[in-house]
Length: 370
Image 1: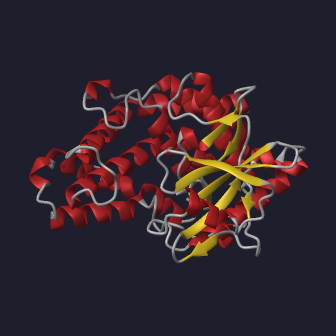
Image 2: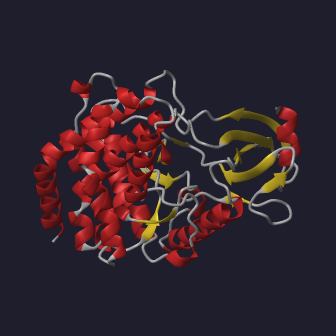
């Protein structure tokens, strides 16, 4: 692998001697490596080298145009506010001939980013403060891009959070029953069908012009926030591959689905699955402290529903994949996708019981900002 890495990095304008590389095993779609160079002063400079997964991101040109456009836009705002653009935003290292990625028939598509030193990411919430800091980071990201020219963005994965489209995929899977598994998940199928009306709510509001189309991250997990080692504060949002037009509610709802669940995503014991209202409130406070002024009243009012919808959508995607024979999500045991689906649907049911409390939390947060 080292020889392959060497063959790729010669196409980028790195200075110094190539010292070493090591893989970053963070579960992302793309293969990621840290590469290290030693300059003439004996200092080590690091960069992130990534192989773009073109089976998922089928148009790398459009993908990188999105990322370059968004990062250039963010950097200008960061500089204007007196921040550090190289630390608070990803930087694409272009190839020697000025391209955003290197392509070779043997090796595929490769890109490079700056390495943000003295920072770290985490996969699980270690404290309530960490979750609130993540909320602030994603809220700030939303606000800073609120005036981005949305018509210049490409859909890197069409219909990614279009729940109506996801429901249609689910129904198609049920009708075809390709894996012959339908009899093993009938209660889950009925659960999903009973909430069909929910799938259309946000899509209909968007189509009627009642919700604004925005720049959205679409993968607002905790490990896509970089934290400063010294202060513990959030400094940068990473993994921008799914940045595309969407609803702010998608990002908020998915953060709650992932971060405020009291159980793991594939917990078999459903009695452990619930929405932590304290974490929900912390995230609301952190998110609105940064993004609140840029959001419409309707967007804020639909925040609780978005948590339910994104959880429902995720569960439905797991169920669809299970019925189709595990074609999309990586599984570690035969009914892994069904277990994941049941966990998500258990969380949906719990959110439904807590929606009124969640709405009151939103109202309290709004009143404190006035």
